[in-house]
Every structure is written in structure tokens, then in C-alpha cells.
Image (cartoon, rainbow, N blue to C red):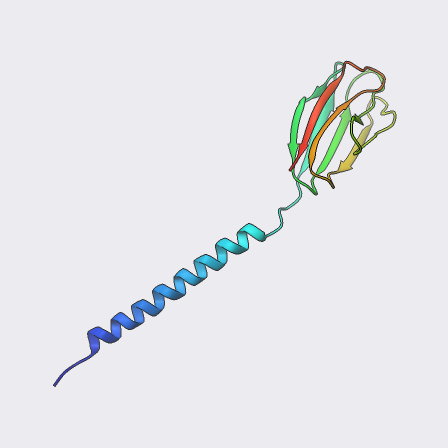
Length: 120
């Protein structure tokens, strides 16, 4: 009498391995296309400077410039993007990154104040 137990076990192992491989492939693909959760970033304005001077964000992130200085400032993009208007001491300006690219910006009242925001 011939038995096929060993062969049946190999078939189940092969099916299990294919299932695990397919599930892992699907999870990997889903993680690559899943949208990123928006993040909040804060840039402080203090001592006639933006801190940090170079920032990075993702599309959809919220960027908040907080004026902790003793005088008013602006946050003005050198390319189309954002313009805060006058931000009084203790005030803030919030912008949601809608476009990708490099956004150099400056203060209209203190033109030596410059920084860069990169949105990916």
C-alpha cells in the first residue's frame, strides 16, 4: 500500500507559502500607496530670525510660524505660495502645504531674515 501523506503535506506547505507571499506583497504595496498622515510643524520667529532656517514638510502638512519676537514680522514666499501679512508679537501665521517644491521666504520688514521650506 502506498501512502501520499508526505506529498499532501508538501502541497499544504506550498499553498501556505503562496498565501503568505501574496499577503506580504499586498501589505507592502498598500503601505506605499497609503496617504501620509499630515504633520504639524512650528517655525519660531525670534531675534530677527526664523528658527529653524531650513525646514522640510510633506504635501498636506500644516506649517505654523509663531512670532515670539518683540517686533512685527512677515513670512513672504519668494515664489507663489504664501504671504502672511503683518504678524504682531505673539501672533502666528498658518499655511497648509498644497504644492511641492522649494519655497525660499523672507520678512518684508527685515529683508535679511530669510529661510527655506521644502515641501515633498
